[in-house]
Length: 345
Image (cartoon, rainbow, N blue to C red; front, side, top):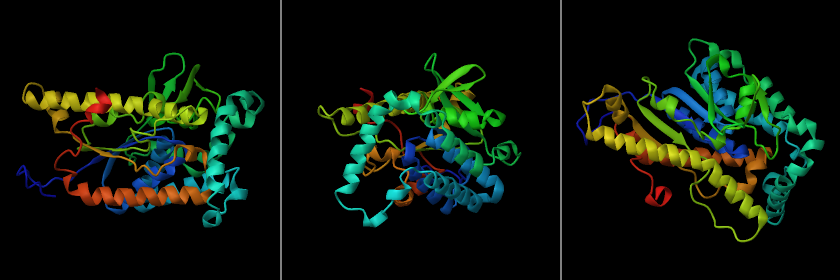
């Protein structure tokens, strides 16, 4: 890959892929990953939160199992199993669904999420994440994460007591760790690991960037975002307010981390030669695949196969367009130098 603007030598980019979470919208992330694998991307390390952690585990174990094709198969296996466990299978009418039914169903998701906190104590099978545990246990061979050929995987969860992020890596990525990373507190009970209670990693590191930035084997950090920074301003509708609050909360850590990273990179570039660690940070190329506005927040709970397919296809299409526009820059230069000022002002 040539970099004509800076005259640099051809580089073989080694990608650190940071996967944001977002419930069933993780299927959009699946589509992004699938398109990147199809394009021949060389993935050197992975991080993820919530659904991004599940995608990351499937990706890394699949790469061990059978390279890029194995990873694509593993991701499809994961999401098909999610759909098989969906309580909405009976109403998965696909393209036959009427124009009025889908908005009605979306409203139903909103109301169910608002009411879940009152019914959770009486729904132990939901609270202990029984269905999701079974899906992950049956579709992802976590022992493959310990294989010497496995690329590093970093999974975040949020400590309930402090709100701080905890990163699970290597042998620490257990079934419980993945459940902790995906534990939305308004639906599931906190996951206990070694006496500590955890909630969804999306609250504190969504996704984790530090381990990829500090990885000497990574030349390009690509963040696969699921929840857009900007959204509709809600009126007085409680469900719309709850959706917007959730989106803001799940993006707060990413805004913070990207703002800090790009600011430190600018300082590092102005002081080249002062510190090898800063020089390495300055050389890290940063990219963000932002999601389209078509991801409706209410559909984060919709695990019907028709919707998962729609999200996957949308992810593929959006990633293909992004790669067409920005692919030549991977291995050459950053496509994200700073966040829009309205996000950090």
